[in-house]
Length: 283
Image (cartoon, rainbow, N blue to C red; front, top):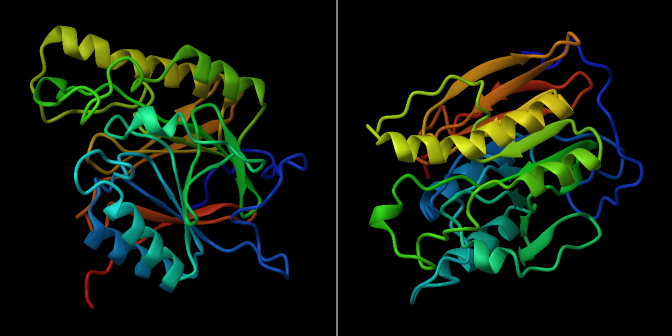
């Protein structure tokens, strides 16, 4: 499937440094994998890394609820093992924050010249409103969402009230930086029809809608050809049509455990093409 066929040629940001995830020495753009929520599932992450490497990718982009920096006695264990596995396959993983991520510690990380903050040498965080270049594609990040399950969580240990949701300032920062080829979000823009499995009270639905409305504003302003998100633990495709005749292809990715729905493969092109990535679990 060709994404954004009615768009102009994919943009490249000459001002952005490409310290991470740049084309190979011959200038060839390698495929890029985009993955849904992983929830600290190391075994699934290993399957994902092997499948991505077998498909020719060197980079995995992930849409939040990754599970690094998670508080508790085992803090850092998942991070270290994930980083070691990425190193073994010569892979890098860049992610935006979900709602179930340690927002306090993510905000303390130093953002480097390539727009990314290092959690571990192979694990890199794309802050909200930030951007980087991946295989010649300008990638913007707008992580965050409201936790509808907050009543079952502990503040500052498994829930980060006040800083987990998308904020207007994040949107303004990203828009000010200009167009992007790919937008990574955790939640889904408001115009994408989603059906949750939970029967939520009206006040929680209203609160959760705030982030979705802000993301919709970002999409209408930036008109990115491609948007990838997660959060809803389902696989869905939707096209947002803009008044100027352009369109945004939205790919909502499923969570860990979904062999055919957790990840896709982007061929940077041009033209950019997307195909499913079947995450193998053998071996």
